[in-house]
Image 1 (tube, rainbow, N blue to C red):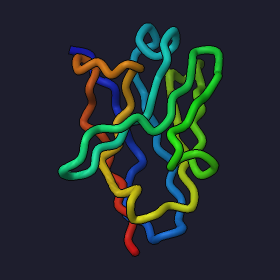
Image 2: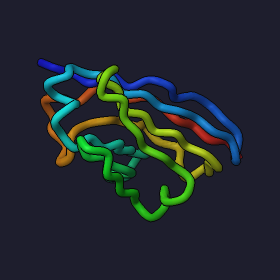
Image 3: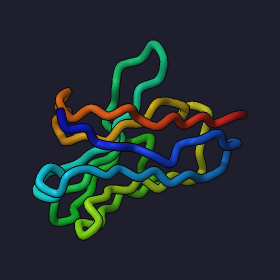
Image 4: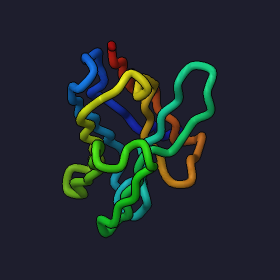
Length: 115
């Protein structure tokens, strides 16, 4: 089973920043739309941002203007830079293809924003 590997989460105060990274096999990440998802306890998983193989991006409303998704195809890595973090951003963050494929589910990286 192939897993994508997320890293970079942590504990920050409201207004702080974090940068998440997602790595995986070239044949999985490079040709596909890759998204960052998050899931808070008791809530459904939601797609926060996605990036196409050529670089087009789209954001969920709550992330627009605060989060930036990018990719470095040479490094097989997709990033999520998060600024102006709020307590409601607290969740486990996952990267995956769009749509989400369970076979590629990684362990995620926890983001906790304290008020």
